[in-house]
Length: 380
Ligand SMILES: [Zn+2]
Ligand SMILES: [Zn+2]
Image (tube, rainbow, N blue to C red):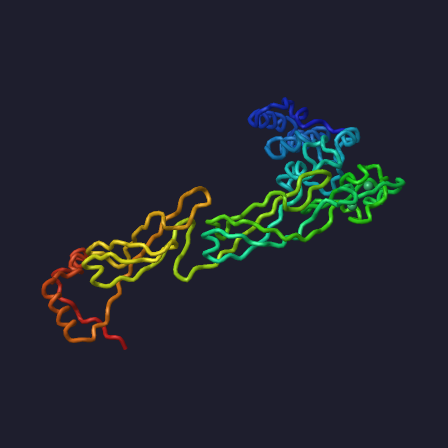
């Protein structure tokens, strides 16, 4: 059975807008609707054809796939299949894989242009390293052992060596190799023999894999300011490429230990520092620890517990440039336990001189300023 082009079925051009497609569909659907044409087989067939064309062309994703690849393979006319398919679909469903076009791109590159042995970049490799808080802050050098692959030196990445040509060792002579992704099973042209089914003998070193595993110790400089979540790239130290493609990169992934006192958030550092009641009341200059040594912090008179002060550029170095973050110091007033009589007398004296009620405003806002308190229920 020959298939008609969806655009042709709806009588629109390939550049038709969605509105034009919908208009054409409604017009034709009214004309061929089975209920309006009882017993008319031809009308029923046309109606189904119209509905199918509309289902695909009215959906931008399906339309893009159709524009690019035509019908599903199991419905493709023979001539079309020969022209375009270097892959064989099994169970391809328009709804199964949303980004099917992207997937094909990834697998084969721009359709029909990709050669079997096109160069491929090697995969990136990640290696985690544990760093202390200070190492991450100041930068360090680590030695990492990387398990990666190298292009086979014997066959120089071809997988085969000089010798008599026989049955391809990779595909067993079929010229095709199975591959799978998600729900899709398909087969691609064998890269070793480029689909001919015949190849030179297998390389005795890499056994046709074109790459060999290597363990390598590398010294890597970790810049000041890395944190958990940053990555340090070492160019070209990932997996070897295929068919002359460049190698991938190595990424060092730091896992930075917490500090007992400082908390780091991005480039800023947070800490809590205790101050005395008199420092809070009278003001003071106090010493506070920073990542870069002791710093002087001025506490103004009348400072409240929980107030936060900023020490400019005392935080962590920024990976983005020659600047540092800030340090935020939260002060916490420590209330002393008075044990001597004299201190107590002084505090009572202080209270007499400062009779303000800090809850007056609260009672006023609650509308209770003039009320007598009632007895609160005692705990059991
Ligand atoms: Zn082959
Ligand atoms: Zn080899």
